Image 1 (cartoon, rainbow, N blue to C red):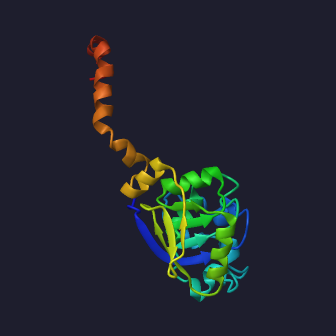
Image 2: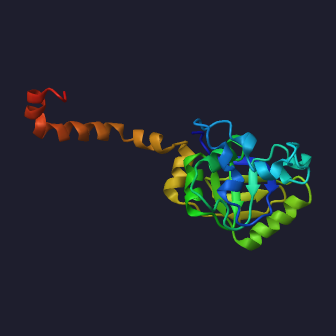
Image 3: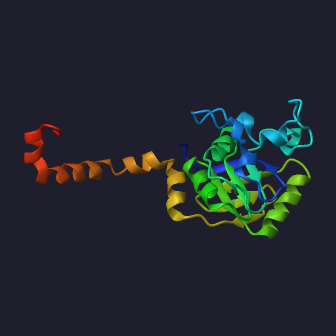
Length: 208
């Protein structure tokens, strides 16, 4: 997983509340077994018209939001089923940060596991960001070390993040990476746990 310390990017405003995971990545695309390649299907039913052509009215299809890596959303983003494919699709598309007044709990947790930073800000601050992003191309800098969001005009917003999750993002650690930090202790425990049963192991030959 990539280290996340600071990120600068264009903001894409998705002005819809209660966006569920089926809208983020529709169920017909869940047959893939690898994590990559889901970005092309992100918000599929909104991005594309019935004839398969991009819908020019959808935010991600508008030229001023091309290359956006910060998604601005409304309340309860990521609700619905717990599919981890939703953050996979967002990350594969190129999003590094999602800002919203609230997130569904499981989705919120899955974002951290996949190297994305979900930021909760008060509704009034999110509304201000929507107004700014709606006027034209709008960029933000997200500083995870300082836990601050800044815009080019010098306005700042502080945010809170769980210290353990923050540390893992700063070090680029997923679940496996975090576990491997304790590899020596795990090996030592396994060896000590075997000692009372060494005679059994020698007799049965099942474990060495």
